[in-house]
Image (cartoon, rainbow, N blue to C red; front, side, top):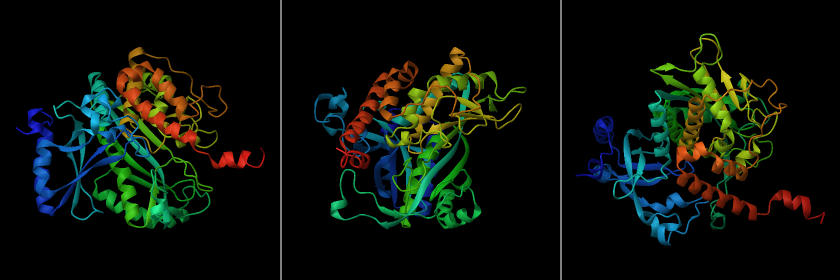
Length: 474
């Protein structure tokens, strides 16, 4: 028996998808298939398999090095992998041992920008068939199952801001190599602040066309293409999707945009606040509602939100500090939390108010009633971001948490502040009992240690601010 059959890893729908996929691979002349998984940072990693080896890879998975799960954003291994238990108490991972990535056939896509190449998203397993506990896609699947036990489905729509620049120097000299390497030197596509003006949109339209053409071929549910507030800043929105579909779409969208742009001489970045003059911060606005028997459970006939919606909203507020470390997982992302910036800086909600952290959209009997979380950054791992929302919202529903009054002055109101730094957010994440239970204490401690390693490296760097502030004065 194959590994997949032996451990019952595919359901009926996945088996049917695998059969369709094999026919499509043969019919389209595919020569290479990328087996990819999302690491702890939401970065795609994996191996590319020749078409002749596809059958075996589908049946028995693809081996891959376990240290990929122990790395920070500089690809530096945080844990001592060559000690007993790999420093994480898991003998299965010591010595940089392999685990298996097993394809989900339902995620199959042909990559339009990469000739004769297809793509599959994978889940992670040890050799004995046990799931790897640090698989973030699995953590969202567990959260969705918990939501399903309560009778609900998650419906999520995505607003994604990002920057695209023209590469003027790719910085590929040997001295530019490193861990991390030197980023490319870039120039702007637009200048000035002309939010949603057609003239500025027309300047970025050639790049939008490049992206749109290939994103449509990936069957992503594209909704709109916009020129954002800052120079060279884009926003693309996706239609609402159910459950895992929306998180998978975000992962594929982000990777596709970067690859398409780079092949055409552009650099796309989902970094929240690039260190370039006059460039604005980018956010990821997550629109969410719950479905009950296929209908929006947040709709009220007479109020702005149903009781279910109000309890869910109260849960998001109650756990906002802990969730911040998953919605904004980079040191850089906290530079966005500032007043009067169309980004939140404190914990509250508002009725159609873009200054509030949580914006409630809709009204009595409005089928589009939903909650928009404006705290996230576009670099967030979608599986962890979504799962944090589910655990927080469910806690509000289960405990029937009371909802505070809506904010009308979001940047003046005396409300609790969002964490000011990643370090502060990690402290709140560790203390949040609901999130620790939802994700598992082992995962939370693992995740925090990796992020703390990034913070430690950052604290050892001498910044331009320090040089300006002290070099001449002291």
